[in-house]
Length: 407
Image 1 (cartoon, rainbow, N blue to C red):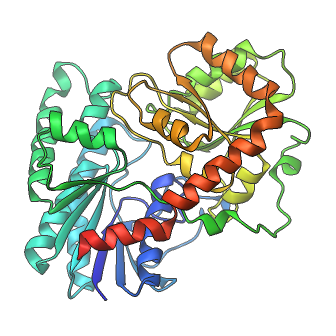
Image 2: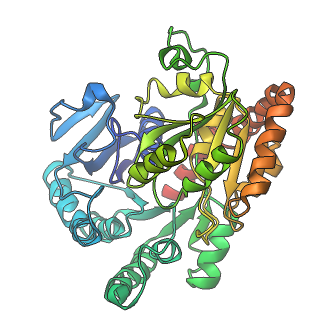
């Protein structure tokens, strides 16, 4: 048995791929006999309705995992300056609470982004003698530069600070994991990370959550979408996703009344997409608020196709976590990705869906029509994805690899 700390800026009941991923990691390690703490921020954003007024204890247990919730400055839906200051304060606020509640640690697994949170790995390493494992999900500040979030002379000081933090974190970490081969290659070639230090560890999914759904929950019925062909996007609506591309596609197939693009989520680009829906009078594009983690598998069950979208401005090989839920639920994937994404390779290996770049609206429109015409094949394609996920991405499969890094 090991004493393991997981540090992440989000954790359920907040709804996001990162939050669910970290909960599955924490509870998976606990089930395998480890003593697990999670340090995370106090839930404020992207909460299902039933949690929006709830008060959370600073320290409590959930399913055997000890959770420390820390109040911080706002990280979401704020301007860049406030967000940057909040990120820089994160590791110090978290570390103060870790010292208060945790006596001994063998390993710290730190989720990044946000990049500054990874500094906590070095703090824990020095105080507890723990191994520092950096679970890197995106490459910052490179992704922010690519997306235009950090650009021009006024952001040069911020870029300099973040790149200094990045180098320090990569040097301090005992092991670094990334979820795709392309990302590992980028880190070695562009960021000069020691090849002996870095490993490809695919993101995982608790497949059991998506099977044997027995509750009488129907979002189709609740939202009046019976007999529609639902293309579902569920998650954060931000710059990285480039959802205006989907609005352009929806406009081009507005004559196909059966097809509905259903967006379930929130984010800093949500208002922008709502304005596009109103501007183009898109009857085939609907936005709904987040649902809880417990309801999420039922939401996917109601979909015909799971949608993944990444802006073409992305330049790294990032693979969105949404792939995992769709595959675990045996739903085919429709992906519009930046050309560098390893999502193309995943779809090809798993034979689990359709993909094209998020640059050509006409080509994307043609692909949507193809998926609709070939809807009798979707069940088989979804089952291909489930089989691949069960063999390669299941929680227990990946936990064995993470335990090997820890020990």
